[in-house]
Image 1 (cartoon, one colour):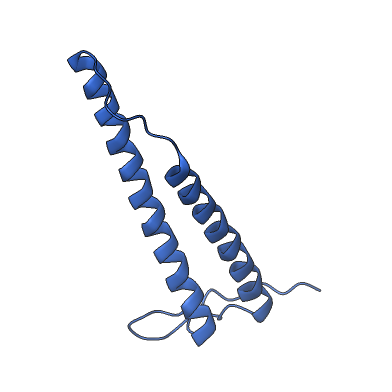
Image 2 (cartoon, helix red, strand yellow):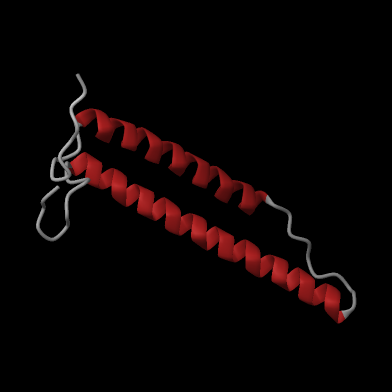
Length: 98
């Protein structure tokens, strides 16, 4: 018989384990995307018209922005994993209730 959880109940160990697994997969994916972006060959500015130079500059800005987003995502995932390790994941940071 499956019992419904009360919305005030804490997460079960099995749920925490599944969440941790999912977070680790997300982190690995984000790290891979970040590594792939770093390995991407960005062409140096070539002699060309101002539109070519502007296009290359925009490409670099987008690459840097995506890298920043990946770093932010990895940081948030690592924070969640630390909370799991400390046993406080799924609890309010203010009142510590589930």
